[in-house]
Image 1 (cartoon, one colour):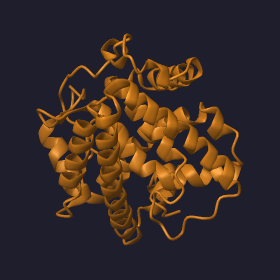
Image 2 (cartoon, rainbow, N blue to C red):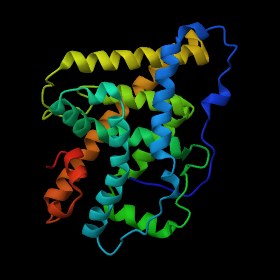
Image 3 (tube, one colour):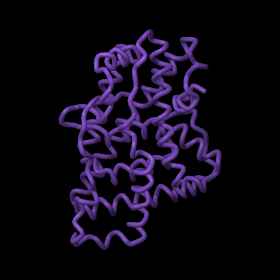
Image 4 (cartoon, one colour):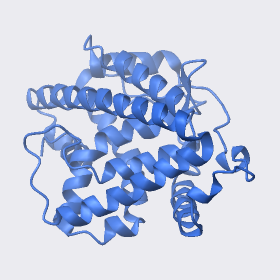
Length: 271
């Protein structure tokens, strides 16, 4: 997917949280430990993400699509590594881990990009050595007149605003959705072997997120914000289904399938 040039400061929720909040009792010491663990894991894996730079291949459409799969795979692998550090995920049945990654990674990839977006300027962090003209040409080759790039950016902007780019909140949402069976809206998604274990993990992180929101904003805003977040997630679901179908058609109509990055073949459900 797409990145632009801009340096912004992400929200540091450690500084913005008021430790005198009278609702602090909604989160126990164990809850805070779990939250800090997620924050720490994410930060350690993505701390150098903005130092990545690339030179786009705009020689032809096939080359552009192959190159897209390669750099998208690099970022997606970091997300996979993040999830592998979460005990509840690593303790799942191996087939269930594969299913959740394969069918849920694409919408999570989009949500994660909200942490690197400036909703005021409409641009992304870093990539200072990239040529903006080549970038536009590259994504025009990849997406054509499908409207994917515009919808993608609009969804990121909307989700960034609703979550206020609270890094802790977005980290927790990523974990909740990792354990969401059916997020992909794909009829091909197999049945999980241990549904109870997946539901138990999701319930834990949903409760943690809900209480974190109450701690930060109080009950009234939490109800409103949680509803808005759920609505945006449903929009992201629909978009990623369209995105997956678009790429499946594009790739299967060419001879590039075997040149496509293996992880993206799996995520796009073309392998």
